[in-house]
Amino acid sequence: MTAFAELLTTGIYVPEREVSNDELRARFAKTAPDFVDKVEAASGIKTRWYAPDDWSTSDLALRAARDALNRASLTPEDLDLIVLGTDTPDYITPATSVVLQLKLGAHRAGTFDVGCACASFPTGLMTAAGLIASQPGIQTVLVVGAYMMHRLADPSDPMVFFYGDGAGAAILQGAEAPGLMKGAFLADGQYARHWGIFSGGTVEPASAASVAEGRTQVRLTEKYPSEINDEGWPKLMRSITEQNELQMEDVDLAIFTQVRRSTILKVGAELGIPEPRLPMVMGKWGYTGSACIGMALHDAIVQGRAKPGHLVTLVGSGVGYNQAGVALRLTEALKGG
Image (tube, rainbow, N blue to C red; front, side):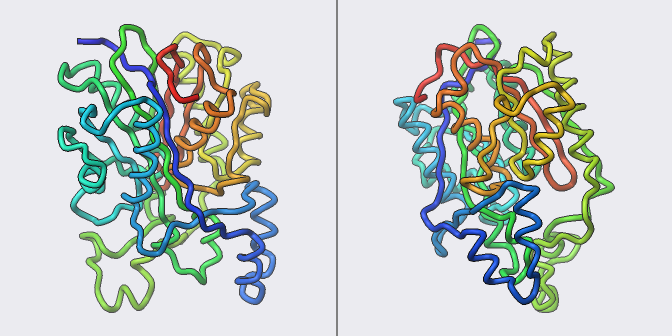
């Protein structure tokens, strides 16, 4: 049994249909004329991409999973486990991961979902690494983050600005030295009602009334204080580096949830991490929620910004709120860059 896990490869899927900020400006010209300009300036989001109308989240995950497998020269039958992170599942139940297992043809793999919004990808990586280290029968794990929130939103709500479709994947394998290193979590349930889909579960089962009144669609009910990320991300980064006996200057790339460029730059300045070491992909793919950290990691690898020997931190922040972060040392096992 191996004692650690390392990153073997990554994968990605970005849909074909582009929905530009100009398209949204036209849509909201009368109802929210200044919204797109205002949010674009702070977020750095220039566009987003939508999947076909007859697709579900598992279809996005499937394409990213196939990309990762191809880059690693693996087949679906090589997988021992699939971990899928999303807050836009195909169904309330069953798990979207088991739908992905069927579509992928990974008949030997077990599966489970992680549902902590944009913190799901680092949470999934840490969980997979722990299982690899403790379970001899689990040595090759596919972790996927996928997001299709625009399908669960009211198209007349300006907040659709933030909902782009996409998926990012990673394959971990057992290793003799740590690739996935120690991580950390934060959460605060007092913000659980700030942003979400509040009808369709056991608190309020879906009904004709809740559908008509829009409670089965995603809604921002109260703005989050900026301190959640301004303070939470540095706290996670300091915890990660301290636990792994690292200095902040050892971090080659720090990847954060890709929702607001201004926040990433502010946190980077506080931590002494300059902009070139802060990958950002929201300008070309928009905000992709549960998928964005995996997509940003993949982009850094294929662009040659993240290479074997580099130390990369992944910090995710999602509604609830949930936050999670982990350090990743890329090894010579990395394929597909």
